[in-house]
Image 1: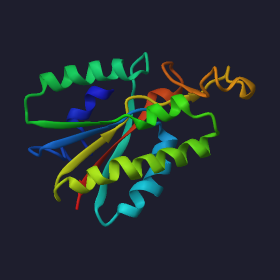
Image 2: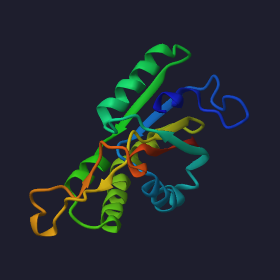
Image 3: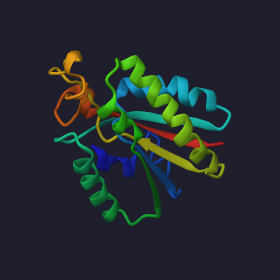
Length: 176
């Protein structure tokens, strides 16, 4: 569950104990998109960032950003252990609501967006900082989508309970 982000454990106790945590929400990043980004976005940045942990979260229903952030905000308010910085990257969600092409086109579009939007922000973070990157929900292809009616219906949607919408990734990255 999204509230579990505050106490991530890798089997060795709290790997971020005592560290300032920077949370980065990649809104609507589903698992297969994460695998694509791990190779194509984070791979080329291996000299700047190291992935030290990753796993899955279960998004609560409805699988929407307001619902997930309500739960996350409640957990943050209860956790007084240290200051937390929070950054929302909303462009993935914006693209799934506007994209009419296939998944491959959508994923490449998202990659380009993150290269322009997220890369400069990651470069500004001082070395040694720990980042917790996570998603709040995924998305599915709209079963009612009609190519002939592509200007009236969205090709991709979210808010329900399919595995693509509710099993979402988290990762812990160390800035080198």
